[in-house]
Amino acid sequence: MVFMMYDVIVIGGGSAGLMASVAASESGAKVLLIDKGDKLGRKLGISGGGRCNVTNNKELDELIKHIPGNGKFLYSALSNFGNKDIIAFFERLGIRLKEEDNGRMFPVTDKAKTVVDALVRQIRQQGVDIRVNAPVDEVLYERDQVAGVRLKSGDQLRSHTVIIASGGKSVPHTGSTGDGYIWAERAGHSITELFPTEVPLTSKAPFIRSRELQGLSLREVSLTVWNAKGKMLVSHYGDMIFTHFGISGPISLRCSQFVVKELAKTGAGEVLLTIDLFPDKSVDEIYEETLRLAKNEPKKAAKNVLKSFLSDRLIPILLQKANLDEQVTYDHIPKQQWLELSKIIKNFPVPVDGTLSIEEAFVTGGGVHLKEIDPKTMESKKMRGLYFCGEILDIHGYTGGYNITAAFSTGYAAGKSAAEYSINPT
Image (cartoon, rainbow, N blue to C red; front, side, top):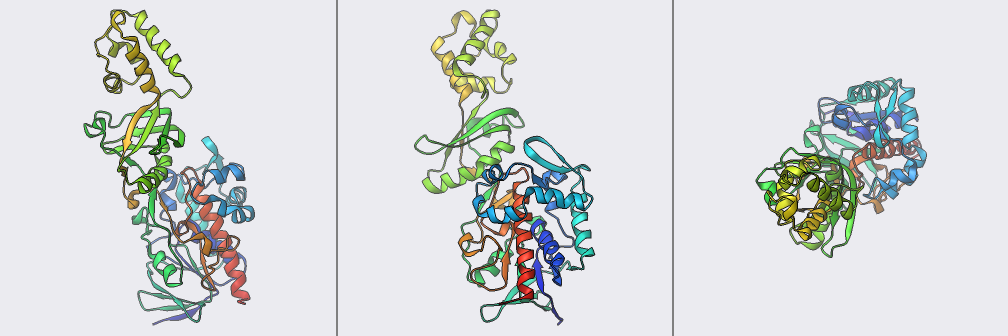
């Protein structure tokens, strides 16, 4: 059994834990970073499709809007170390960044490994001790104060400050298996209900079960979630894809948390989503444009006329929903049904019954209750010397650099505050 003393112990070598280690060590603390896996930054290394979307360049208020899961909690942390600071930080490390669509910031190398290697190199240069393949058994508490950690190997590592940056429950093969929630509860914290977010949606609609649309991508469409009373909950514009189990793609992922919450609220078993295939056109414009196409080729069947306007694979489903014969020609088109077709093109219904599992989600919703955390320091209000950062907190945003921004920002706040506390633990 080994006993060692540190100023700050950080559990978890992901985005938040790495940044916490940077902040704590540059503040003069003797820091130990522990990870149960064989290497650091595993989830960071696969983020952004392996390119690592390190942050988003939007202005603060707009950034917060893209973190619908308690983003306002982050105002203090982001004001001290926000997206502009993250950009400057990586550029100081020699990592040049580039801005892509919607403010997403990537390394010019397009390789996540560039970012991970730079962070690991920096904490080594700052004297951080690193232990990998070192799963933590428990965080030690004595007299309402953090005392250190005990590893599963039996080693005890002593410290008056511990930062839990162990992640949520999504993408468990990177090490995020929910260990930190147990340590938080033992310190007196409550954990809000965990749920998958930024996750593909499932549906039992006939066209999904038949797989006739599987693999079909839709670009620049709008996807809307409706509540049981027919009120719009949220609408997102962008790209999506039909799968063998439902729908996925950026806008489907963004709608997922609203689906989860509405299903839980109503217990109805299904939530209605609608796709607007032409967000920039009105029903009347679609009606007139498609009818004109039919008029220009009066002997052509409707299913063939519409091929210049819609995806081939969607046409039979749309015509069926509008009660239109695929073979109908211009002279025999029933105008009321053609108007109905135009309405369906603007509001193509997709009943959704759930999501893939939390393990298959990109982000975990729920976590350590924020009323029990100081928003400026990330310190526990339940246990002196205990800090939290990253996905273990009840904070979640859309994909696009927002979750990593939250992780870096809360990690920096926790690391800096823990270092200050370790020097003067009063």
